[in-house]
Length: 298
Image (cartoon, rainbow, N blue to C red; front, side, top):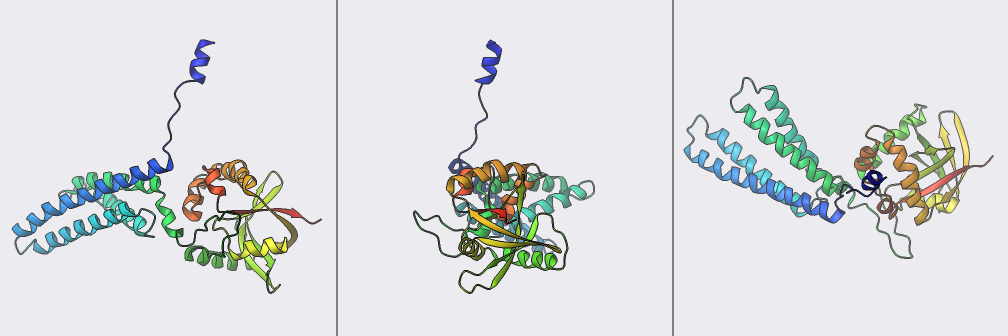
């Protein structure tokens, strides 16, 4: 009995708060920037001592160190501000690591490059996850919750709109795409049908649609109309929609979307990167998103 008590009350793994995680990520980036500056200083000396055969290569190397020291400094200053910079920097370092590993047995200095860029890749990936660097793609489109008011209409990021059109085209010709459906809603002003491809979350016989970007047009249309038509190939279904309040949204992320995403390999990571939503933080996820439960009319 005593052993069971110790096990139940033993120390639990600590979890970084968002603020601490963000600060840790910035510290890692500062260290990376300082390391690049030190490398640039050493490279400058190599440039001054280089002969005609290696001068261009040494200048190229120096320029690379200076460039990356600047990129790391920018990311440390604003980790979720520069869309695409994170991904390009990580891809570059990862590619150099892989190339160095491939040629480690036959190229001078390849093992050192693999070690240095491999460690740097790990540092950057850690900082990327801690700071949620993927949110840089949505900082200009992310809705803000206003006390007692609805936020103004926002637009999803360009990549979401682009792939949405692509998904819509594939669904229109009858190609099945998992939980995605064509959702047709009367326009709140014109009354004309507006069709949007959305993922319908189906769990335990209940269905929901949700908007990672908040007050987009289809959300306002569905709120006003209260009904929609779901199209899946040749099948069409009329449904009504009920919008969830703040507490219900949190319950949705905690008990519906979170478990469903985690049941799929890398599902929660996909939602985190594609939609900028961490389903493992349901209270935070519920703040500025919109969720509707769908009900069959027959």
